[in-house]
Image (cartoon, rainbow, N blue to C red; front, side, top):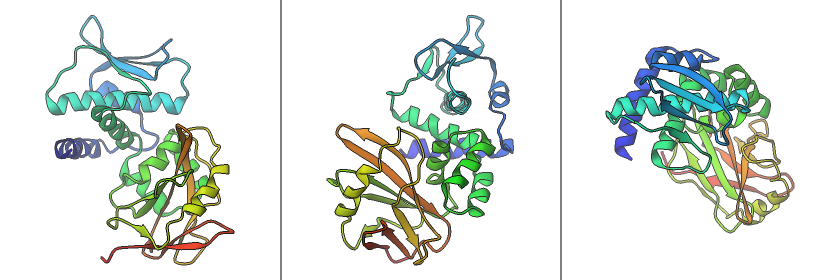
Length: 270
């Protein structure tokens, strides 16, 4: 993990030097790295990186993919190129981006793709000036030509923007996992099992779609700082979803479902 973090840090410095502006011309970045062909293919997965018979690099993507998915696929394959250059490990066979593949290199390539498509300097500035609302996420997604889900996940990768993210299970069999870049482990004064179980009826959105739910993380006692639920997906009979909020004054946060109780989060001492 430490080696991967150092690799990401090195690549992040290179990305910062590109001074990318939204919407990022991701194909121009690929060409800068020696890719001579970016083309659609009738395949049943997102895409792959390969060497052509003449030795040049090519990125192929699924021909019926939407623009945001296509751009992320191209950025993901750029991630593989950058990893190869950073580690000195060449690749000779196609590197396919399949939905079920989930190893450490794939996750790192996804992170690099997010860094390329959603440069931290620009997205942090936009989020700081935006309310925690679904329309704000969609506005940023439209500006960067990415999916709303990509923006949602990117929030919890930013280094300077304060955030709190909670992952919860609709069956309430597991405690919600709360993550923040300001604090260590965050706990609830009372386990919100009953409140979380009530969310099951709301968690019907297709996987990787962003939608607003009644669940909130209330900041400073004000309902204006509202958190919305993001992606929800199935794990066997369970459904899993995430909520996130960002901004200042996160040291006064409460988990809240209208009609239910407010459950203060126990934040560690600074």
